[in-house]
Length: 324
Ligand SMILES: O=C(O)CCC(=O)C(=O)O
Figure 1 (tube, rainbow, N blue to C red):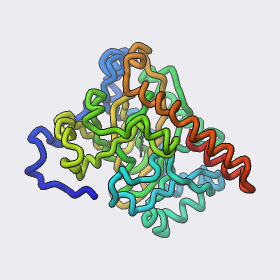
Figure 2 (cartoon, rainbow, N blue to C red; figure 1 turned 90 degrees about the horizontal axis):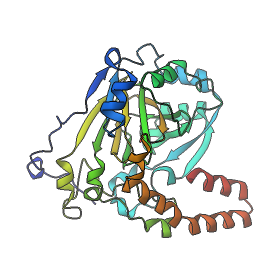
Figure 3 (cartoon, rainbow, N blue to C red; figure 1 turned 90 degrees about the vertical axis):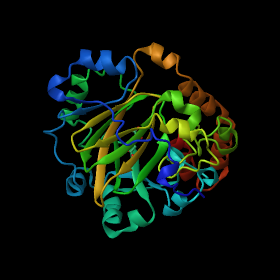
Figure 4 (cartoon, rainbow, N blue to C red; figure 1 turned 180 degrees about the vertical axis):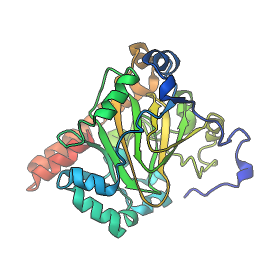
């Protein structure tokens, strides 16, 4: 169990004013974005590009997404009180239940989503009326992004929800469409000061646990268990992402994302192949995640075989597929 340290115990450089650059749409060209940020893998917030986009309120989303089904992560509130090393699953490894958007909206409204820390995470918008949000696409073109690795994904939950500290192997753009989020970031150089789960965790847990996730709670660190985290705090960046802002999160940058306020908070993201490719090839953080996926194979295969032999095999298969 990790407790919040006294402010005095935090290193001096852990100031909350180590901001990520913000650039206004009017001053942005694909060349500036590439030369100053994408080429070197530096995060940046772009403001003003999405100003004309609709406000993605719950009513708006109900109207657009209605009976479309989505997997909802059942995180369970109690996990945030526990040492992460005791968690049985994390991120995409968390158990999900599939339900219509309208059903999820009801859980957001009636308090059940808050009680059980439910989250609609990384859910593809493909085949929904929101898949072709033209403004989002023109925004991506203004940044000169050309190599999409995924479709647009929806992230929707209540204020207070936290997506725990992790990094991705691809570049990402996180677009804020309703409410605000706080994002705490650490550069790839801090990988081991953030105590990521070891690659070998995949041998025992398959894809339920992830080598890209940190074992530390950055807002209530346990310095006894994770002493090198003090060094990482000297490289802590913080962003408040308001409606209409876009955050470029380069591959390998660890980020923890907290939805602010008490109402619903909604974002869309997309992952991009890392460009220039040399940045991806040089990235050890990327290779260790791929190594983890290889280590997960025997466990995934066993889950697959178990699903095949069970009477509920279609449910078992979809559980395995969701984690891939
Ligand atoms: O918005 C969130 O909760 C998490 C988003 C995220 O991790 C990402 O965009 O890479």
